[in-house]
Image (cartoon, rainbow, N blue to C red; front, top):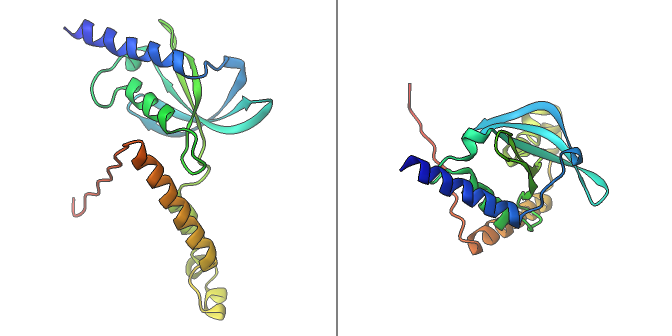
Length: 178
C-alpha cells in the first residue's frame, strides 16, 4: 500500500511540474546561507534570473526520498498552495521548480521575503535602538503612524487574498512549557 501512496504523491508532483515554470539550473545561484530547515529539507538563500534580471530568492532543497511523502504536509500540496497563492504583491510566491527527476534533488525556488514582519517591527523600536531620540520626540517607534497604517492595510489585503483562495493560516503558540 505504501508504494501506491508514494507513487500517487510523486504523480501529484509530476502534475505540478507541468503547471509551473521549470527553471533551468543555471538560472539560479545558491549563496550557501541556510535560512532554515523544514520538513522537506534545507532552505537556502539564492538569486534567480527572471526576465533578464536577478531577483532575491530562497530555495527549498528536497531530496528525492522526501519529495515522495504523503499526507497533509506533502511537498506536492505545499508547492500547489504556493503556486495558487502567487501573484499578490504582499504574498510571497513560487518562481518555479528545478530537477526532481529520479535520483536528483528537487529545488523549489520561491520569492525571498528579506525580512519578516516581526523583524521589521523589532528594528523600529526606538526605545531599544535610540532611547535618547525616543525621549526627545516622545515616541517609542521610528516609523510614522501613517506608514504603520499603510502596512496594516497591506497585511489585511494579503490576508483577504489568502482567504479568497481558501487558505487557512494556523498559528499555534505554546506557553508555560519548562
